Image 1 (tube, helix red, strand yellow):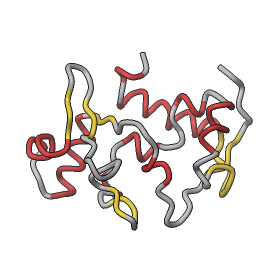
Image 2 (tube, helix red, strand yellow):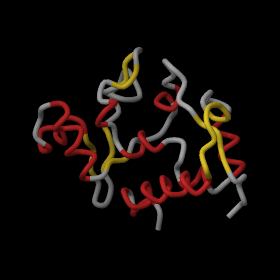
Image 3 (spheres, helix red, strand yellow):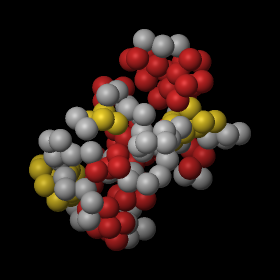
Image 4 (cartoon, rainbow, N blue to C red):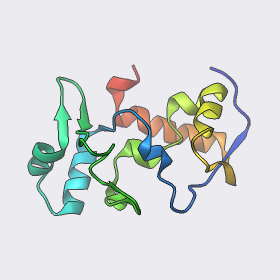
Length: 140
């Protein structure tokens, strides 16, 4: 593991959705599905039928043809209060918190990195651990 500084700076910037516009999948835990479904007034089963692609050991949001996410609009995330763990924890993913190089690479598109209050590295690592717990199949 590359040693990071004792603290990082991060604060989401108003109106920014750059993290949502990057290529890649939004992985889901069972609790992510339940939370989003409840927020939308749906059953978890109905939410899964409409929005989720499930493989043997992973779930992810389906990607609509016209955008990167069903829930992303110009104004931001339409399920923001119930968004998946992966989205909520960004940029404190294990692969970013544990690598100065990956953090810097991500900062090229994320204008909130390097701004705002100091985030203690111990707190960032706690969030990274939450990500590991939510998606154990991704972090073996």
